[in-house]
Length: 426
Image (cartoon, rainbow, N blue to C red):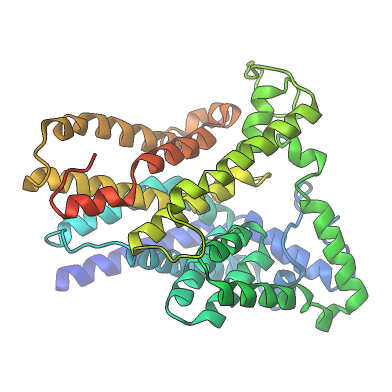
């Protein structure tokens, strides 16, 4: 027991040292604080360029909430923010684990191994969020905590949490159609109502005219139909389906930092590109029905099934939305955790003799190869940083997310449930 306590203390100390290190420099939180400060001196925060290059994309309410922090040193603000992110990450992990059955894992060693591997798979995107002091961890926390509260009949609180996430950054809007499809009508109605209230809450501080002006300016900035969101390649570090299709289907995408290495396989018009992007997005959105695996307005048949469908829906976020950076792929966390759990269950079944079929055993090497490749492609930026410009040039992180979609497609939850009944995982 004393050894465990010592390990926890050492771990927390290392985390705190890492926080003090990562809080150096400006990071994206400097943009948030600067926009908050500018908001209260009458500037149009959606036209300003911060650190000479970057727009503020988040809500007026978020800028208002951050205003008290503008009176503190930015380094202290970032330290506090990163400490909060440690808590959000811990809570996200606990929420994901609530969907999983660990009763077949004998002893704590397997749980520690599972935890280690699961965090290893998202180590790059986790580091990117801490390094840039981003809000992605907060957004994922609000989504999962909101779903958890709704499942536990704390509907108003759950809806409010998700609404806060949508107001800050539009990405969690994907949860609203999911709630409707699963028959959470009361939660959906409360979410919409809470979102409307949050959107117009700045009227109290800024007045009606200035609030509506800012909302209009924000929409002009984030409108997915904007030309720069169709040809979504103005920065080398952008990753998403829009960026992937742009760089491989258009010869001159406007990326001033692109390497002098040919990567496009076609050269279509901007209009054709927009049609292709729309069709590809629709394909992945419609594919959601496969992961839901039931008729509308029926609740998920098990906790594992709900994690499976949420994993896919959250994985879609950095893929279908434009203007996504490395840190946005932290939304993969539920999906990568689910995959790690799935294959650990497979190997556990092999070891205990629950899956003794020869054709199942022959898959062991293939699984190791697949998981190793998936780990490498998702974390290449962190593991082999010397080649980052090539990874970003060819959008390897986006390809990794697409591979994860394919792996999820195969690793259906009923296979785990069959395995727990003594049948083989196929």
